[in-house]
Length: 104
Image (cartoon, rainbow, N blue to C red; front, top):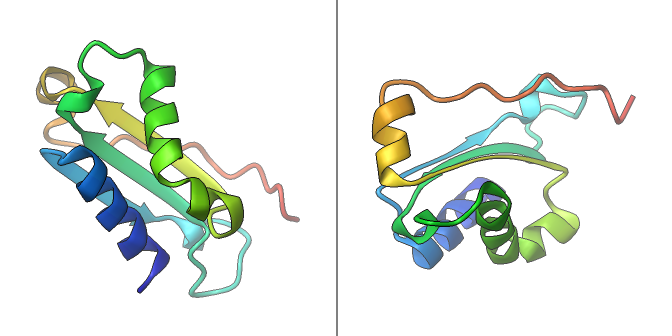
């Protein structure tokens, strides 16, 4: 199973999101072709209602702790409540920050 598929399945199981995108952005970074080390996750879940952004990120990081320990180098998280998603991003996916070249 690919790293992206593992991320997707774990997040589906943990949050039952109404929207989930797991995007492999490794090709935007200084890594070998075919790498699975840099990801963007866009997730909309009821579990984020009433939670501050840092808590949402901690919840996701806890679910992906094993992958973050040795498979994922960078993880851009975009975590939303249903109302935030509908108001701000329903028609577009937020951009990730540019690579700072940390592995050069």
